[in-house]
Image (cartoon, rainbow, N blue to C red; front, top):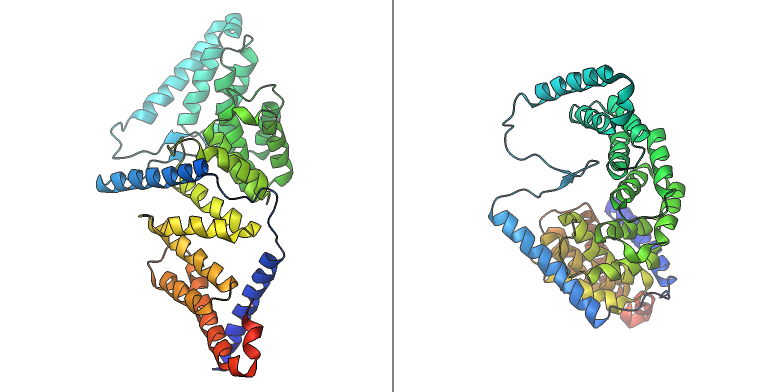
Length: 363
């Protein structure tokens, strides 16, 4: 019993700290709820995602993610070309031999250098690929292949885990005048910097993107919103999320998990901003979703809102439902603990009511 009570007190103390943080986090300037148009867009995002996932599961198809960092579709089914790598290796030898035979004329052949770089990428020999991408860039005097070389060279550096090469490529990218045509490079740069937790360089990339933020593709805008969220700049993240809501709910080359993040992030922003009415209305929308990850999170956050409003009995029931549901994430363990905390506080509050102690448990 002593161990249980100690654990209960520790859990309650942790949540009280969260409660204090929320209490002192007043509504920010950008915390107004969604407009009617944005609310419609939110519903479109959710229903579109539901239809995609339902159709895919009925067909027995796995989610078709693009593989990082080259944005190539994941391979499905058995390999039908067992001699593919042998053919590529042969092509590499022939191209390199052709390169040597050209002599002085090889300066006019950036395409051969680019082809050889791609062959080495297919062989997963990224060191050699980077050498040939560098040669292709050097020979491409008229910049006919600049877009392909820049993106693929950066991807090869990422695949090779070449930190210096990536920073050099990112520097070259943000040094150009326009973002248009280089969106994929910026996406790759943001994803790399997020993984590396390089907040300083990430901010430099975001500052560059901000110069032309009205003309971003939806996929780049998602990663900009995600990056601002990671940097704890909720208002800036939300400004981009509001724009995404107007895109009609289509995939916009985003994965299912990325589209789900948009649906999570918007009500969570209102929650953390202190606009609990707006967050609750959106969490209630999520609870009606056919996607378990969305509906369970919506119930969990509504239970948290009930707890913060002193509705401990209702909160405990909500936490229990989340705790007893199918396991989705580790945060459900917190729901199990909070169900105990809410039940105990409700008991203490009701027992202390005749003595005036109940007021201590009323927000």
